[in-house]
Image 1: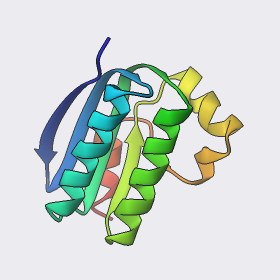
Image 2 (image 1 turned 180 degrees about the vertical axis):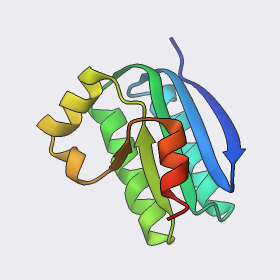
Image 3 (image 1 turned 90 degrees about the horizontal axis):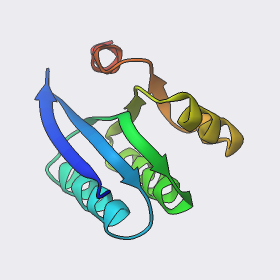
Image 4 (image 1 turned 45 degrees about the vertical axis):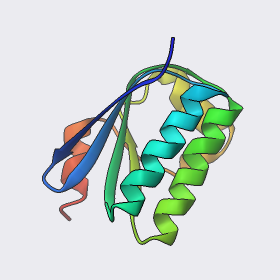
Length: 115
């Protein structure tokens, strides 16, 4: 299943809802390009809603990590929300849980930018 990306704006925060798999190939390329475009547009608050992500491979994790670094270099912030149990375990195992800001819900992620 191809990765479907839906982008919306909430209180000045860009919210990307991801649906499908983040794996090597067109899926992670599409995500990488979309994130690069948001950062290039000057978006400083970006949330990735992971509630409908079925699976992620090492390439997908690399894409998320690279996006985090790119956002940080541009003074932007990238947060993840609505992670499933399996994805939370992957982040813990790879120690990426210490890199990403993770919120339980999209609403909590949006609210966290207002502090």
